[in-house]
Image 1: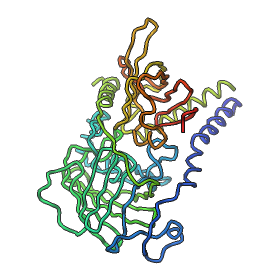
Image 2 (image 1 turned 180 degrees about the vertical axis):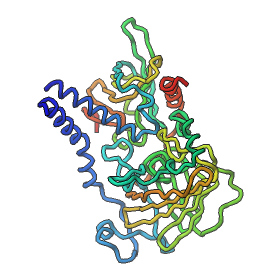
Image 3 (image 1 turned 30 degrees about the vertical axis):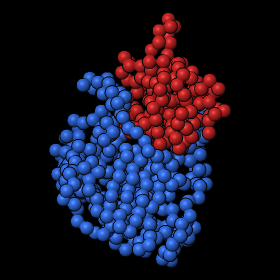
Image 4 (image 1 turned 90 degrees about the vertical axis):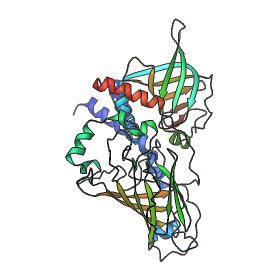
Amino acid sequence: MRPRVIGTIVIAVTLAIVCFAPAVVRTQTRPGAQQTQGTGAPASPKAEAAGPVPRMADGHPDLSGVWWGGSDIGAARGRGARGGGRGGARGGTAPPTFMSLYKPEAAEKAKTLGDKDDPTLRCVPTAFGTLNVSLWDVGAVGQIVATPKMIVMLTETYHGFRLIPTDGRAHRDDQPPAYRGDSVGRWDGDVFIVDTKNFTDNTWMSAEGRVSHHSDQLHIVERYRRVDATTLEIEATVEDPDVLTGPWTVPKQTLVLAPFDRILSLNCSGIETQALMDAAAKQNTGK
Amino acid sequence: MRRAIRTALVWSLVSVAATATAWAHHSFAAAFDMNKPVTVQGTIVQVRLENPHSWFFLDVKDSSGKVERWAFEAGTPSGMVRNGFKPGIIKKGVEVTIKGFHAKDPSQNVGMLRELIMADGTVYGMFGSQQGPGAQ
């Protein structure tokens, strides 16, 4: 290999290390989580280190807190939740994504759509979440306010919320189809199960221009489990018989408690961004 | 060696742009021409920290004195704020230099913000503070 090429590689690697080293350091020195108390079952060494699962007055795990993947969008260590936030896998075969399970006609429809058609450009939320975390929607941070009767999930990016009764009741019949659907919940031991349906069909499953249209038959079942004081695991199964060939098992997401207790209140207009994407589409495709 | 450093820097910028793309609410690669860097100096007219992306508007004088309005798209407000970009830190009327990439549509005075440089040398990146006296 020529010295110039070797020099280029060495410098590029060095710059990459400089750029991403903070990710490693900051991950190892994450600020302490909120103080919690509770009477959880015998804990693993990891759980003991993080602290026991806090519990509500009724004995169920308290899911309250601001949950993220360890950082926000744009931070050096921001990589979403652990466990395949973007559906990827290290080595081996990548797990299926929502779009990989499209029926032929749904795949054909997807080919007619592009970046400029992404509803989130117009401040319309996703039906699920760009990083496969419904609590986050388009962003990478969300908050849960839990009570024994109702669990409230608040999404920062587009002012989204879900009011989830915990008593196992049926879906309400007075709720018009909604961007984020209608959710009901129940406890199965220490796991909180959320059943969501009654979606509109004019959102996508994720943002970032990733074409991920769905139908109004979308049905999402999530399982939330607080592993210890600072860790929340979420598993989900997604069905949409109108557009998918079968259920999509979402890669398990592992969130951590953020070192702050309130999400921000942020506006969305999307005016310039939509115009930008419309103009870019004309440049890219001539349409 | 100088050429090697230049090549490496270009690759680093491409990597950073790719990272931003992966986290953006839309594809930056689809909207901006990464082969078309742009630098403008002007007066801040408005800063909007909002979703889906923040925007910086500034008035730029050309060599003939004619003023043109430019708009630069930056990161998501939550990421910018939590990375140390405090709201109101860049006020209307301040002189700044913005480096970035031009929108794919060449007729628009629009770009992707890569660096915003204040008069005191403070540098803010697409997602918040980077370096300089006022950076965190």
